[in-house]
Length: 164
Image 1 (cartoon, rainbow, N blue to C red):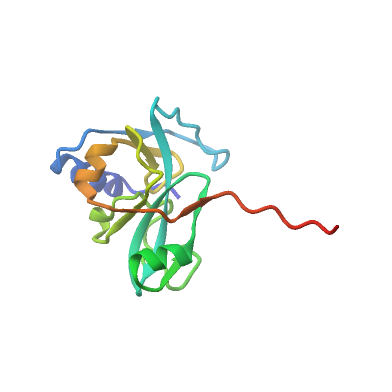
Image 2: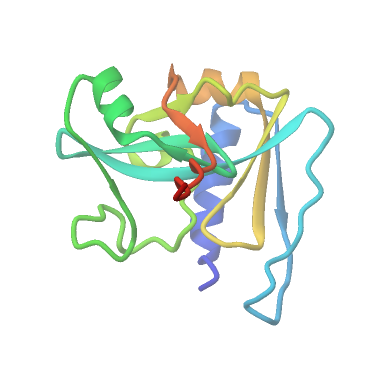
């Protein structure tokens, strides 16, 4: 599903009102797969946004692509129960919005928490479509979103134990 122009306009207006330096890239893609490849700028980092319920309230958790949330650790640092939810879950708080959700909690009226590994010069994320990317200077992202920065992501999976 491609986002409506109003969703992207909302992001653009939000970032412009905040005086943030950003670029929006929208690629036409007649086929749903493969997704468009976007060239990440030097000193940039592509991130994913995970939606969690912290104490029953939605929170956006921003992590480097290829990492996952350590739910028990995030629960400990937030001091409340945490449940990671996806659009397939009944408890998902944004069923009207197409994934991927951008890490702009201010647009959605919810807090944003960022893993401490996310600290590049340029943050790159998808915005409501696999073909729409936003690049924002990390300092501007931090100023606009005022995210809580914690350590809660884990990269990869542990290897399965082998039988000896």
